[in-house]
Length: 215
Image (cartoon, rainbow, N blue to C red; front, side, top):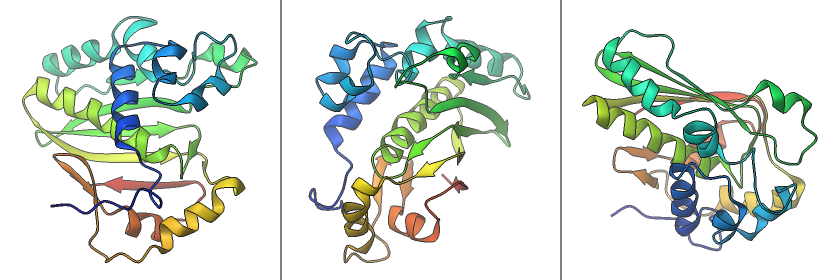
Protein backbone atom coordinates (compact mmCIF):
# COMPACT_ATOMS: atom_id res chain seq x y z
CA UNK A 1 0.00 0.00 0.00
CA UNK A 2 1.35 3.43 -0.96
CA UNK A 3 0.73 6.24 1.54
CA UNK A 4 -0.79 9.47 0.25
CA UNK A 5 -0.48 12.92 1.80
CA UNK A 6 -3.44 14.01 3.96
CA UNK A 7 -5.98 15.96 1.89
CA UNK A 8 -5.49 19.19 3.86
CA UNK A 9 -1.76 19.14 3.10
CA UNK A 10 -1.65 17.78 -0.43
CA UNK A 11 -2.83 19.92 -3.33
CA UNK A 12 -3.27 16.86 -5.57
CA UNK A 13 -6.91 15.82 -6.01
CA UNK A 14 -7.55 12.45 -7.62
CA UNK A 15 -10.95 13.38 -9.11
CA UNK A 16 -9.49 16.50 -10.73
CA UNK A 17 -6.51 14.61 -12.15
CA UNK A 18 -8.84 12.06 -13.78
CA UNK A 19 -11.16 14.82 -15.04
CA UNK A 20 -8.26 16.72 -16.59
CA UNK A 21 -6.95 13.54 -18.19
CA UNK A 22 -10.30 12.62 -19.74
CA UNK A 23 -10.77 16.19 -20.99
CA UNK A 24 -7.36 16.07 -22.63
CA UNK A 25 -7.96 12.66 -24.24
CA UNK A 26 -11.26 13.93 -25.70
CA UNK A 27 -9.33 16.63 -27.54
CA UNK A 28 -11.72 19.20 -26.14
CA UNK A 29 -11.25 22.88 -25.38
CA UNK A 30 -14.75 23.30 -23.93
CA UNK A 31 -14.85 25.32 -20.72
CA UNK A 32 -18.04 23.66 -19.46
CA UNK A 33 -16.49 20.19 -19.60
CA UNK A 34 -13.45 20.99 -17.48
CA UNK A 35 -15.28 23.52 -15.29
CA UNK A 36 -17.30 20.63 -13.88
CA UNK A 37 -14.08 19.47 -12.20
CA UNK A 38 -12.36 22.81 -11.63
CA UNK A 39 -14.32 26.08 -11.38
CA UNK A 40 -11.10 28.12 -11.40
CA UNK A 41 -10.52 27.42 -15.10
CA UNK A 42 -13.23 29.95 -16.02
CA UNK A 43 -10.85 32.77 -15.07
CA UNK A 44 -8.65 31.91 -18.07
CA UNK A 45 -11.41 31.77 -20.68
CA UNK A 46 -11.65 34.84 -22.92
CA UNK A 47 -15.19 34.16 -24.15
CA UNK A 48 -16.72 32.02 -21.38
CA UNK A 49 -16.94 29.07 -23.76
CA UNK A 50 -13.45 27.82 -24.56
CA UNK A 51 -9.96 27.62 -23.06
CA UNK A 52 -7.78 27.46 -26.18
CA UNK A 53 -4.41 27.46 -24.41
CA UNK A 54 -4.85 25.16 -21.42
CA UNK A 55 -6.51 22.51 -23.56
CA UNK A 56 -3.39 20.54 -24.50
CA UNK A 57 -5.58 17.75 -25.83
CA UNK A 58 -7.33 20.02 -28.33
CA UNK A 59 -3.99 20.99 -29.84
CA UNK A 60 -2.70 17.44 -29.60
CA UNK A 61 -5.66 15.57 -31.12
CA UNK A 62 -8.05 18.00 -32.81
CA UNK A 63 -6.80 21.40 -33.94
CA UNK A 64 -4.40 20.34 -36.72
CA UNK A 65 -5.06 16.61 -36.82
CA UNK A 66 -4.18 13.79 -34.44
CA UNK A 67 -0.50 14.34 -33.68
CA UNK A 68 -0.34 11.34 -31.34
CA UNK A 69 -1.43 8.89 -34.05
CA UNK A 70 1.18 10.36 -36.38
CA UNK A 71 3.90 9.95 -33.76
CA UNK A 72 2.98 6.30 -33.22
CA UNK A 73 2.98 5.59 -36.97
CA UNK A 74 6.33 7.30 -37.39
CA UNK A 75 7.95 5.31 -34.59
CA UNK A 76 6.49 2.08 -35.96
CA UNK A 77 8.05 2.87 -39.34
CA UNK A 78 11.36 4.21 -38.01
CA UNK A 79 12.36 3.57 -34.41
CA UNK A 80 15.30 5.97 -34.73
CA UNK A 81 13.17 8.92 -35.89
CA UNK A 82 14.05 12.33 -34.47
CA UNK A 83 10.80 13.87 -35.73
CA UNK A 84 8.48 12.53 -33.04
CA UNK A 85 7.44 15.90 -31.63
CA UNK A 86 3.96 16.89 -30.50
CA UNK A 87 3.79 20.68 -30.79
CA UNK A 88 1.45 22.52 -28.43
CA UNK A 89 2.66 26.12 -28.50
CA UNK A 90 2.00 27.75 -31.87
CA UNK A 91 3.47 30.87 -33.48
CA UNK A 92 0.04 32.54 -33.40
CA UNK A 93 0.18 32.43 -29.58
CA UNK A 94 2.80 35.18 -29.79
CA UNK A 95 0.13 37.51 -31.19
CA UNK A 96 -2.76 36.55 -28.90
CA UNK A 97 -3.77 38.81 -26.02
CA UNK A 98 -5.20 36.25 -23.65
CA UNK A 99 -5.03 34.89 -20.11
CA UNK A 100 -4.84 31.42 -21.59
CA UNK A 101 -1.48 30.94 -23.30
CA UNK A 102 -0.25 27.31 -23.34
CA UNK A 103 2.20 26.44 -20.59
CA UNK A 104 3.33 23.35 -22.50
CA UNK A 105 5.62 23.90 -25.50
CA UNK A 106 6.11 20.36 -26.79
CA UNK A 107 6.46 16.65 -26.08
CA UNK A 108 9.36 14.76 -27.69
CA UNK A 109 9.45 10.96 -27.92
CA UNK A 110 12.58 8.92 -28.60
CA UNK A 111 13.37 5.20 -28.52
CA UNK A 112 16.58 4.04 -26.90
CA UNK A 113 17.41 0.39 -26.20
CA UNK A 114 13.79 -0.63 -26.77
CA UNK A 115 12.38 1.82 -24.23
CA UNK A 116 10.33 4.92 -24.96
CA UNK A 117 11.65 8.10 -23.37
CA UNK A 118 9.68 11.33 -23.14
CA UNK A 119 10.93 14.91 -22.95
CA UNK A 120 8.40 17.43 -21.63
CA UNK A 121 9.23 21.08 -22.28
CA UNK A 122 7.16 23.58 -20.34
CA UNK A 123 7.14 27.32 -20.95
CA UNK A 124 5.83 28.01 -17.47
CA UNK A 125 4.75 25.76 -14.61
CA UNK A 126 3.08 26.41 -11.27
CA UNK A 127 5.14 24.17 -8.99
CA UNK A 128 2.44 23.87 -6.33
CA UNK A 129 -0.87 23.90 -8.17
CA UNK A 130 -0.23 22.39 -11.60
CA UNK A 131 3.01 20.42 -11.76
CA UNK A 132 1.55 17.21 -10.33
CA UNK A 133 -1.45 17.30 -12.69
CA UNK A 134 0.71 18.06 -15.73
CA UNK A 135 3.10 15.25 -14.90
CA UNK A 136 0.25 12.79 -14.36
CA UNK A 137 -1.57 13.51 -17.62
CA UNK A 138 1.52 13.84 -19.82
CA UNK A 139 3.13 10.67 -18.47
CA UNK A 140 -0.13 8.94 -19.40
CA UNK A 141 0.52 9.95 -23.02
CA UNK A 142 3.90 8.24 -22.75
CA UNK A 143 2.06 5.14 -21.53
CA UNK A 144 -0.30 5.17 -24.52
CA UNK A 145 2.55 5.38 -27.03
CA UNK A 146 4.51 2.67 -25.19
CA UNK A 147 1.49 0.38 -25.22
CA UNK A 148 0.87 0.91 -28.94
CA UNK A 149 4.52 0.15 -29.70
CA UNK A 150 4.61 -2.85 -27.39
CA UNK A 151 7.61 -1.61 -25.41
CA UNK A 152 8.34 -0.41 -21.89
CA UNK A 153 8.20 3.30 -20.99
CA UNK A 154 11.57 4.80 -20.19
CA UNK A 155 12.65 8.02 -18.50
CA UNK A 156 10.77 11.29 -18.39
CA UNK A 157 12.84 14.46 -18.80
CA UNK A 158 10.76 17.33 -17.42
CA UNK A 159 12.04 20.83 -18.12
CA UNK A 160 10.35 24.10 -17.15
CA UNK A 161 11.71 27.44 -18.33
CA UNK A 162 9.93 28.98 -15.35
CA UNK A 163 9.02 26.70 -12.44
CA UNK A 164 7.44 29.08 -9.98
CA UNK A 165 5.52 29.40 -6.74
CA UNK A 166 3.07 32.24 -6.08
CA UNK A 167 3.08 34.07 -2.76
CA UNK A 168 -0.58 33.16 -2.20
CA UNK A 169 0.48 29.50 -2.03
CA UNK A 170 3.62 29.99 0.05
CA UNK A 171 2.10 29.03 3.41
CA UNK A 172 0.41 25.89 2.12
CA UNK A 173 3.50 24.92 0.14
CA UNK A 174 5.59 25.15 3.31
CA UNK A 175 3.13 22.82 5.05
CA UNK A 176 3.47 20.49 2.08
CA UNK A 177 7.26 20.39 2.30
CA UNK A 178 7.51 20.32 6.09
CA UNK A 179 4.85 17.70 6.72
CA UNK A 180 6.19 15.02 9.03
CA UNK A 181 6.51 12.06 6.68
CA UNK A 182 9.21 9.46 6.27
CA UNK A 183 11.73 9.67 3.45
CA UNK A 184 10.16 6.79 1.54
CA UNK A 185 6.65 8.20 1.14
CA UNK A 186 5.74 8.28 -2.54
CA UNK A 187 2.78 9.38 -4.63
CA UNK A 188 1.40 6.90 -7.16
CA UNK A 189 0.70 8.44 -10.55
CA UNK A 190 0.56 5.33 -12.74
CA UNK A 191 1.30 1.67 -12.21
CA UNK A 192 4.82 2.13 -13.58
CA UNK A 193 5.64 5.54 -12.10
CA UNK A 194 6.58 6.08 -8.44
CA UNK A 195 7.96 9.47 -7.53
CA UNK A 196 9.21 10.58 -4.15
CA UNK A 197 7.78 14.07 -4.45
CA UNK A 198 9.16 15.20 -1.10
CA UNK A 199 12.77 14.41 -1.93
CA UNK A 200 12.30 15.95 -5.37
CA UNK A 201 10.91 19.29 -4.18
CA UNK A 202 13.30 19.62 -1.24
CA UNK A 203 16.32 19.11 -3.49
CA UNK A 204 15.16 21.44 -6.30
CA UNK A 205 14.99 25.20 -6.18
CA UNK A 206 11.59 26.62 -7.07
CA UNK A 207 12.98 28.27 -10.17
CA UNK A 208 14.14 27.17 -13.60
CA UNK A 209 15.28 23.58 -13.44
CA UNK A 210 15.50 20.29 -15.24
CA UNK A 211 15.05 16.96 -13.58
CA UNK A 212 14.81 13.38 -14.75
CA UNK A 213 12.22 10.90 -13.54
CA UNK A 214 13.36 7.33 -14.07
CA UNK A 215 10.87 4.53 -14.65
